[in-house]
Image (cartoon, rainbow, N blue to C red):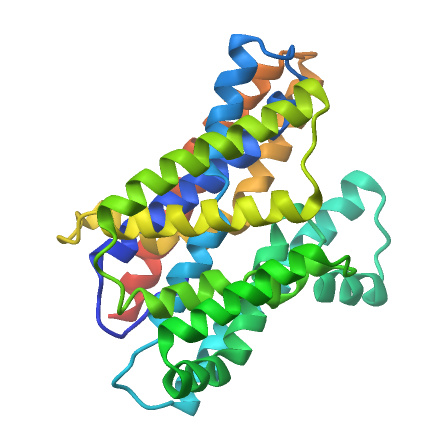
Length: 324
């Protein structure tokens, strides 16, 4: 989600756009998949959309790893500090904003201790956990890059994959906030600088794993047939890696239009802000006594595309204009 001044990859902009849209899909379909009539056409449509979009956060982490690993470039301390600042400051401000919203709407306490607790845990609102993960990975990135160079990028990534799968077997408090639960996606970004021969395999893998992943979800919510935690975590890991590879191999790398490029640069702001539109949609629905589950999902989607996305792109254009 961070704009890099290193080598420009149009494909990475496309990955950002796809991942951002996928995050939106996950959040606007989250309620319908569990509240619509089981096995109805409507529920299945929402489930397929939700499951297809599920690798969105791993894709964002993969992008960050791909951009962080530059094999021929030495470590630059000033750039490293700047990158961490770029992540921490907006995260702290958005966490504060959401706390103030919930103080007004949900009775949250207005206290520094409460703020700091949820700032550290990344759970002031449901999507902020990703920023905690990304901050941790960025902090440890010099060590990860050094390890990849010393032991070989692909072997180091495979070792990280084993570690991530191992975490899936364990019950660790707040494991979804620990970078080791996502480290394989980050280092897969490193490895993708060297893996360029699996294009067709990635298409087959993402299709098969996606169907299995979707099928197991339907079995769990509609029929009560659940996989063990480690099995579900492992399946999600491999499906997400396949999705990262598929998108990286198959998305074109020619330059984007200026509008698409602005969208790509705005994805960080869209990610932070889109839950506000979803909450606004819920508030409007209550005021209008509008209780259609599908209608509320569509309303939230419309608000995101009519407010959050244009405002975020306008901010990018304004920031660019004031620079020059």
